[in-house]
Length: 212
Image (tube, rainbow, N blue to C red):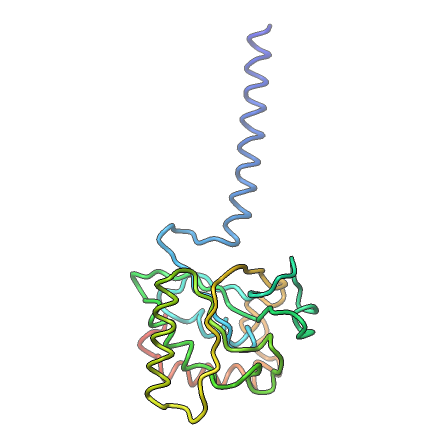
């Protein structure tokens, strides 16, 4: 009887542990790469709807999430960030395979798909949450971002100085569900038709060799 009870308890414990572990893994899968070899890149270049639509089309990019980075308040939401009174920026968290695309190539796309000379705005989107920013995840990314920015400044491509902030990564909070895959889910929306679609056409023409 005791032996039977022991096996019943052992089975119950194992089942509960597996269920709990599965739940943790499912939650982790929402925010972590599927393969350990993937790396992160975190960029802010104005509205994250545009950035997400662009980077989702890049070969070697496995996942893209829209969200908020750079602030101090815990669990920020769109209303808080949109107030412009925090240090949070609208960003995309990019999961990429460095064997398929390099961080330097992602930097090239970043700098060529928005105006990095604009201070706290992109087009009609105004406020510090729309600033041009690179949040680096390690010293190598920092060096590459600083070097790339320096070379662009030396080249004199823009008449105004590059305003892109290069700062250490400290957090990332996924934006609300309706912000994820916004362009894909709302292609007929006015912002998508008049802002994102024209930008995508330019991007696809310039970077056709990097498209999925």
